[in-house]
Amino acid sequence: MERVIIDCDPGIDDSLAIMLALKSPEIEVIGITIVAGNSPVELGFMNAKRILKFLGRLDIPVYAGADKPRIRDYVNALDTHGEDGLGESFLPEVEGQNVPEKSAVEFMKETLREGDVSVIALGPLTNLARLIDEDTDAFLLIKRLVSMGGNFKSHGNCSPVAEYNYWEDPDSARLVFNTLYEHHRKIEMVGLDVTRKIVLTPEILDEMKMVNPQVGDFVEKITGFYFKFHWEWEHIRGCVINDPLAVAQFINPEILKGFEAYTDVETSGISMGQTVVDSCGFYRKESNAIVFTEVDKSAFWSMFITRVLNIETSKYAERFGQYCKL
Ligand code: BDR
Ligand code: CA
Image 1 (cartoon, rainbow, N blue to C red):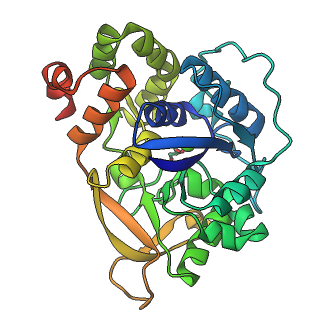
Image 2: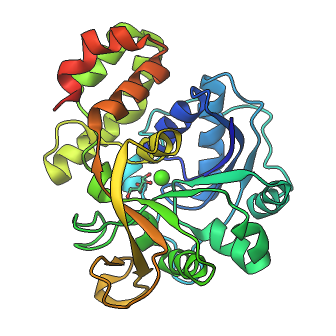
């Protein structure tokens, strides 16, 4: 079992990612750390608790982290995720859950120093940049760093060229990429090129509700708002669920394919937040990123649906196969 910290900003798709992670026997989630992103950090903390309560896993510790980006002003994504950050599902608050005194970065430092711990980052990279500031050695102990963020050929979702997580805090993203470069390490970048291909359609959701009404109804409750947003902005039926793909890739590295390249993040101007991927080797620099471009959609949906709904793989093939090839 791989020990993992999930650093996130829940967030509708962060919540789906947490659901997948906690139903996966290959990983042990030793803690969830929250960063300001989709939701302000206090709201993200409460939402993580709400998801853990639904999953009956309030034993997993949650730590609050950065409440704003490194340099620029904070811009949340509640327009996409609803005013409660969970698709306006307005789930009840989990009682008696105070924010622990230990910060997200302190927790990361302590546990990373124990060794053999990976990080799946599903939000802006502000907590990780703070970790670099405070304890670069602990940051470098991260076994695998998988980050949902960035884009190569795909257009962005905050500007023509920038994806939200890196656009919201480009300075932290740049520090993470640059530090990895200096130390000959690599980030696994699960960007929009692959996540855009993971669309939770109304058909898949209907089947989910029929097969496991408790989980299906919950997923419907938190994704309804996201469906509307995607229709209005992109004319997509359903919603793109970015973050669970990073968890799936952590569990099964065969799900995504890509290439290694030196990558940097623009921090200002018209292309702020853009990942500049040197796929042609112009800079003659060692690669610091694995940039994914292809996804085995069927393998993703098979993993996601069977685990989140607690069904056998054979039943998945019968009921969901037709939708998941789309
Ligand atoms: C990323 O930004 C957020 O809206 C999602 O949770 C995901 O992490 C996609 O750009
Ligand atoms: Ca997220």
